Length: 358
Image 1 (cartoon, rainbow, N blue to C red):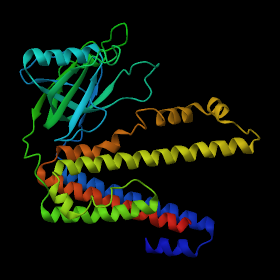
Image 2 (image 1 turned 60 degrees about the horizontal axis):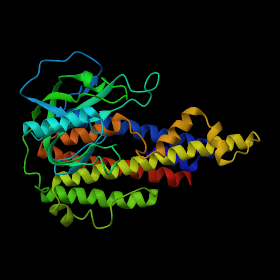
Image 3 (image 1 turned 180 degrees about the vertical axis):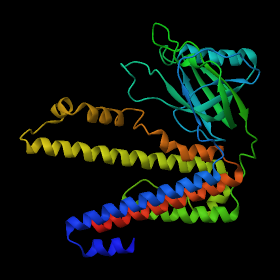
Image 4 (image 1 turned 135 degrees about the vertical axis):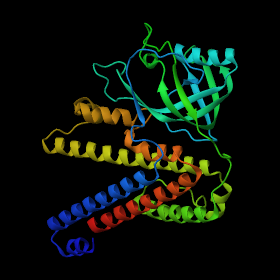
């Protein structure tokens, strides 16, 4: 590392760029090696943690069956979650809960393909086996307020975690009516994990280590002009007053903001490079013309980035957080600290590379 750094400072600019690329490559290998060893040592979730869901036969119902409402985000114990109930299948889910007196719903992360074959609905989904366990607290009629678009607003609290063992009716994700709406809801067998007190805070030593990492990261994020925690949130005294699961959720939300910020920067760079290339060809384009002539793949990314749902993250982004969700208390707290420290290492490298290039 030091040899590459010294060589980069003394070398001509083309060689300096090569040294920076080599530095980034070495850092990437080190990061991959760290995560590989960390995952092997601490992960409680088996490698095949995703269910590849395609249309298939139904299995025999079970007393352990729970309804499933796939979630586009990782949900954390103690959080309050609200779903808009639109499709007939999900309407039936909540009406069945009311009739039976049951209240539990599984909410695993769903990975939806970006490009369905032939357009329309996807022909396969992926559901993660680690799911949030929701308790239905209120079900509000919303037909009049939404002109019939939303039937119910379902309010839940995440009361625990569950490990899905098998899906009982995967075809529920694919059976559609004439309006292309799902008419059934998914059910699964799952083992509910033992849960500690969700309000329990971190131990003092862990809180101090996490505070040190988060405060360092805040300083580095300011240099990189990236989102960070508000000043004062990361001090040890504040962290000791917060439930550990709430800290995990706060870390997850920050990382999603940072990832979205980087994706916007990446797409912006790509758009500017394309506009510059067009200008050099003599094609000075107005905004409306640029959208019409933009390459389809780039236009799709820009459109998705500016949609209400925002950028779509790859499944790999969620993996560390799903392992965090599935961990025991001791492993969870240590993993939270390790994730923060690794992000500090990454941020320091990016700051150093930026300073070198400047």
